[in-house]
Length: 163
Image (cartoon, rainbow, N blue to C red):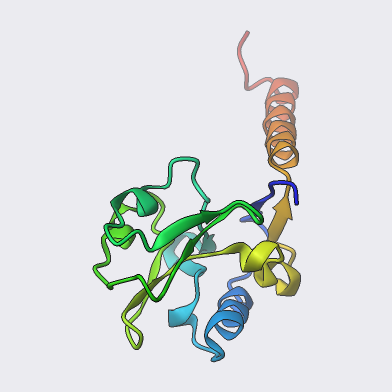
């Protein structure tokens, strides 16, 4: 399986929280957003909802700080995963995550993080707005380039950009 990444199109997110429900059901067999590996942050003053997702960092700080070595990298589906049998619930991984994408299951006393549903992220499949994408990194980067180029071009045409 080629390496893919989860990407968020923030403009499409409606804040419906379907991704949280699907994630908690897939992993915990209950509809409980508090037990999801993806979390929606609502910024009411800006009227925006932002899905916070694990970036599967190249140098994963969650794995680096995990003393019982409960977080490992699964090369088959390119994701860091938590071994609940090894996790001691110290929450160091949660503190170390630079994007705040880790969560904690207080019932089991273990950390929660996105494992990409073993290469088939359910949050992507069930997002009604299409705000979540699971694509190759090159395609994600290309989309960003088009957005920047489009913005530059529109500023150039409107005369707001000085040369």
